[in-house]
Image (cartoon, rainbow, N blue to C red; front, side, top):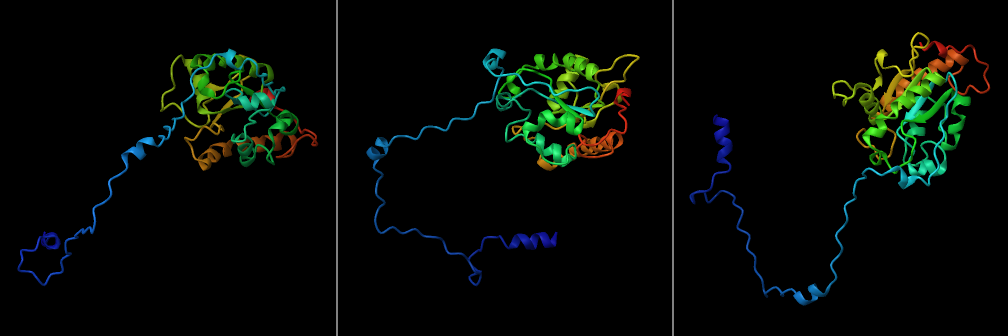
Length: 280
């Protein structure tokens, strides 16, 4: 308490007897001449700068808005190691005819840094994924749009049974959901409600969440949920996205090594055995 009071004494106002104390003299403003009055007429004659428009967020757009754009073809073959599931083609992707074609999209970068590919590929090599790396690609919604906000929750969820049918037909070992919103849509279709915060997790999902199950015949594809690669997705830092992707890339490399004897390209390597049909 004594120390606290002594600290306060430093800020006490001098009573006039402490002339020896150093005091800051009051600041005086002296003007030799009055300030000129602003020229209000000149100010009024100047054109006012237009207010900067705030960027408006996207909202639902009907399929007819982008009906002129070509559809993006699926890249699927039987018994792939994995199939990536995107939301839907963006305008740039639909126009280019190749997956994740927008320069700001991190898909091809993360595909390489995670180990899914041994080098960074351009979007034009999407058609080579099955032959080179035993991987494929599809989307939960077929039609293109500017971004995911132009899709409705209903149509996203309704894409789930279409995905299930594709996986029953092609039977990949695993499916990689590229974005939290896609998994939320699948969850809405399956459970008829929104997923709770406590129920969501990145990475491998529980065994009962497998997709494309054929009862008594095929156990279905394992499900791995990764972050979105869209340039508009800024909720996670780049390092966080890489950390989410890395375990999946390591798993893909291990499966390629087991199936083909290499972690990289498989097109020039003779397969050592393909066991994807078991679903395990």
